[in-house]
Length: 354
Image (cartoon, rainbow, N blue to C red; front, side):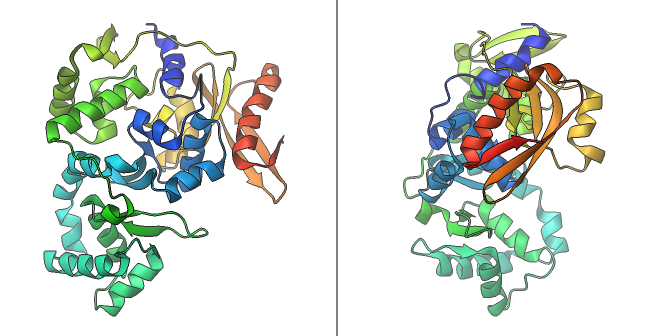
């Protein structure tokens, strides 16, 4: 496979190209996990792969088919709800091990964390849903200060342990639920089974990709990564390009009549790799993440290459989309209209290109 073909192949493997009539849980099981720190961008990332509406994605959250939690790299992801336990045990446990210094700085001792867990479990038992502010109020009433970053890190820590996870939004407020109450049929895998399964899901959905890409995406070590690749045996195929080995489940390169896609910020198409050179140039990457501030802008993708950013402003009746291409797109008016119609269907409002 040539480098210029890799973007097209990834579009297909990530379910951006091709047949898109899937449920949210099917998409998440296929992808393994999807970056979800920015809620608005994350629901569009799932919705575009389903060819469906925002309501359908949010229904899947409310029905505990998919959920958001800090599953890997200390960052919020969408994951299949039933797989939350084994994914947290595989990936999140490494983050907690390295977080002791920050907890000490915040004076969050083991005793305080045990007390915090008791307060939160007692409040949320019975599938109750509390906002972050409501939980902080309960902790403060129990004499546990949530000042500064303390409250956030209490929630962060308990989510990494699999005690709580993020629930459905209440209006615009983030909520929390007890994981085992919310998802009663959590799958259990051995550490080796979990590693093998996550490696398979990543390279099937994100391939072609390298072992370095998976290690960065999952937060696991290269040693674990290579063990997981070995465990999958002949299920994964590989090829070499510029002294790097790329892995995937199928070497076939998909084709699609549509060439333009409006992807969300933080989409797995970009953020799911350590090496992004196959889909974006270095100078263009700086425009996606201005000043390396950690905020990834929504992206215009043409024939597998990221060639611009876009944004939108919604009113009650319509949405205005603004395009900021890095190169000329004058000959792509029809393709851009088709791409914008997908977003129009998702948000259930008429769209206008400004």
